[in-house]
Amino acid sequence: MTLLWTSQDMVVAMGGRPIGMLPEGITGLSIDSRSVTPGEAFFAIKGDRVDGHDFAGVAVANGASLIVVSEAKLPALGRLTVPMIVVEDVLAALVKLGIAARRRSRARIVAVTGSVGKTTTKEMLRHALLPSGKVHAAVASFNNHWGVPLTLARMPDDVDFGVFEIGMNHADEIRPLVKMVEPHVAVITTIAAAHLGHFSSLEEIAAAKAEIFEGVLPGGSAILNRDIPQFDFLDEKAQEAGVEKIYTFGQHAKADFRLADFDGGAEGSTIWAVLNGETVEVHIGAPGRHIAENAMAVLGAAILLGADLGGAIEALGALKAVKGRGERHRLLMASATGEGVLTLIDESYNANPASMRAAIALLCACAPQGAGRRVAVLGDMLEMGAFSQSVHEDLAGPLLAAGIEHVWLAGAEMAALRDALPESVHVTYRETTAELVEHVLSSVVTGDVLMVKSSLGLGFGKIVAALLDKYPAFPDTERQ
Image (cartoon, rainbow, N blue to C red; front, side, top):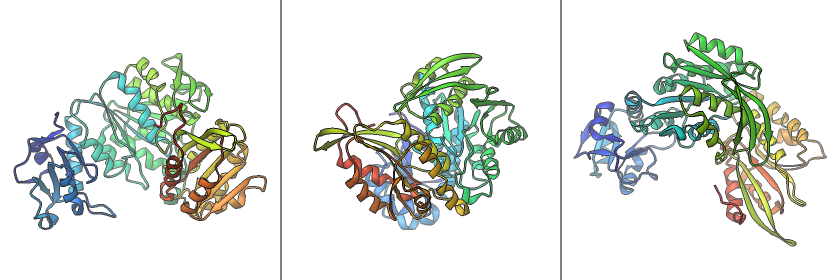
């Protein structure tokens, strides 16, 4: 089996102290004791809620061939006989290993940030680059102070392309992460009111996102959204950071990678893109104008990274929505008149005002069957701070414009939307997610289209899971 790292290279990169007979090397690495597989290394990171050292024994039982632990915790691990690399701080050691991975790599690297669409854009990039070579990208949304170095450290030395997602809740979070990643291309999808409770304005959010430019390698490029009000600000920030080549995407007439036309449907879309001065037709397997818009940045990045454009375009046709970010399920329901379909749109991973509007548009584009209804199942948008009441109230506008007549809500902040909706809308409000789960399971009918969306902290994934547990996949579909 191919080694990801030799043990000796790990010791040198991390400045660690070996204990026991180290294996020749490791095939992978994990910070979750439950997911460790034989031959991998386990990094016992101390997090905000749990300490990985407390689960080192579980990691060993699951087959870890090597564990990385802190000097201070070593006495408590005396009963373990597995080989160890001892360091002062395990997370700092992971960062060092990630930096070493970046230094040894010859891959072309793209980094993505933005208030909305980071993970989906990352997945589009993964698909688009695969026809051109071996691609390494983060799993899930590994975009923070441990996710980025973990993704770097997991990058094999023979990949052709690396795709990294970089997120933030506060200023000065992107800067150290992007300086580890050192991208050839940096993409900002958009600026919107995400984490608004930590910032006083959208310009402050834009400034925090602009930190991504500081890690772009000499001769590298930035790709900016030409359609947003913050474009000029971001363009200036990119120039100040020394980015030599600045490109744009969007519907704007001056965009370098331009969305000329859009034809959207419930299962995907067809767009006409102007790339390198030529108009090409592109089919995208996942629905939504917002995905089509970000696909322009993806195709632009593919061009700048030297990938095969034709292969990238073809790959987007096979794209599927990401779990929790638009993944669609067709479920089999029985009724008094026979069997029918319940359509579930899973947007349960996260939410902010911009992504809420995009999800409502997805719901609007999906037609119910028979006597079914379009139902928006919505939970709180967190981290909105003093703006929370107004941004929740403001969702009434897009819901009414989309003709959504059934709205099921949970969470303290969603009370503001409940009070803002007129009597013509059938509103159900529950204080907790658990209470709303019960309502959803007892109230759905054959033909309904449900779109489930909230911030991750509300746990709306439980609503999705409950529906998937109760109803099987419709016979003509496969769960993704």
